[in-house]
Length: 518
Image 1 (cartoon, rainbow, N blue to C red):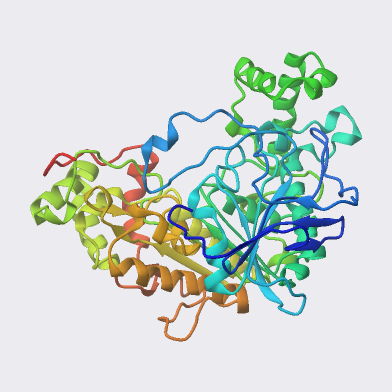
Image 2: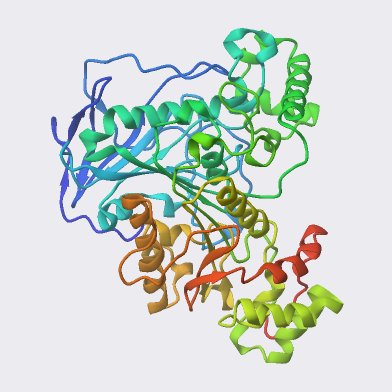
C-alpha cells in the first residue's frame, strides 16, 4: 500500500516459517503483521479439476503475489479512476495461490477467518488487482486472519467439456472447484496462522459475490465455511432452467472445440490461442460462468432453489447506491446546484415520472442530495432485495440486507458506485484518496468495518453502539442504509425502485445538467 511506513521487518532463514500440510513456507513480518503471499493451495491441468499438492522438503518462499489467471488484456488503467487504484501482474495458468495476513502464528489464537473472493465476474480480476484488496488492515484492526484467493477464470475455469471425456466432467465449474480446494487448504492449515477453521466467512464483491452464491449452491463446499457476505453480486435472473443452461454451455464448448480442431488441440494451444478462438467464434469471455448440473452445483437460487443445507448459514447481501449507472461528466459541485437544477436532472432522466420519483426519493433518502436520484441503481438493488426476501421465506432466518450510499468529495461529489464500499470494508480508506470525505469517512469506515467483523465473529453484524440492523423477513423487509444518516429502514425504497426500474432496463441514463465544467 502507498504510504505505509516500515518500522520493523523480519525475514530470516527460519522466521517467519510455517509448516503447512504440504511443507514449510516462509513469509515475512513487517511491523506487527505476518504476511504470506502466493501460497500454493493446489495444482491443476488445463480444464481438469484441482489436485492436492505434492509435499516438498525445502522451505518455499511466499513473499510475493502469485500469477493471476490469464484473461482478456485490459484497456487503459480503469479509465484513470482514482477511486479504484489498480495494479497489473504477470499472468499464467499456474495460478492456484492464496495470501494470508495475520498478527499471530499461534494455534491457540482461534481468530475468525475472512476469505476474500475477488471481483471481475467469472472472467477477469485477481486477488491483488485493486489496492484496497490488501488484507493487512482487516487483520490488524479486526483481529481476524485475512485470506484472498486466485483461481481459474473465463474459458479456463468454466467451459463445459464433459462430452469429451470423464477427465473433463467438472470443467464447467473448474474455477469454483479451485475455490473449494482453497477452502480445504484453509481448513487444514489456517490454525497455524492463528485462524479458527471452524469460523470461516466467505465474502466477495461483484463477481466475487456471485462466487459466494455459487459456493452456497455446491455440496462440495459444505462445511468449509460458516458465514457468507455477497456485495453487489446479485443481478437480474434469467428465465432459463438449469438444464437449458447446461445444454447451452455444451453447445458453446462444441463450437470452440470444433474451431480448435479437436479437444487435444484445445488443451495444448497457448492461452492467447484460446482468446483467438473466442474471437473467431463470437463466444465472449464474459459468457463463461459456473455451469449448472455439473458436479455438486445444481444451479442458481432463482431456478434451482435454495439448498436447504445452506439456509442455516448467516448471510449478508447488499449493493451500492449507484452501482453501474453511467454518471454525467459535466457536473462539478453537486452541493452547489440549486433545488431547481437538481430537479431538472430528474426531469432529464425520467420525464413525466420525475415528480413521483422526487417524492419517493425524499421519503427513502431524505439525507441525500436530490440530484443523485437521477443516478439511482435498480439493476442490482431490486434482485438483491428479492434474493434476501426469498431466502428468508425459504427458511434462511439469518439474512441481512444493506445499501451503501456514501458521498465523497471526489469529482465534486461522488455517490457510492460499484465496489466503493471495499476500501471501507478492508479498512483501507486512508490509502484511497478519492474515498476521503473528512471525518465522515472515518465514521463510515468504523461503522461498516465493525459490522463485517462482528458478523465474522458471531454471525450477527450488530455490535454495541451501532444502530440496530434487523434481519430480513417476508413481512418486514429490512435494509440497513450506510449513509450520513445510517440505520435500519423497512421496505423504504420499493416504490422508488419500481418507478426508476423501467428507465434502467431500457438503458436510459441521466443526461448532464451543467453547473460548472469538471
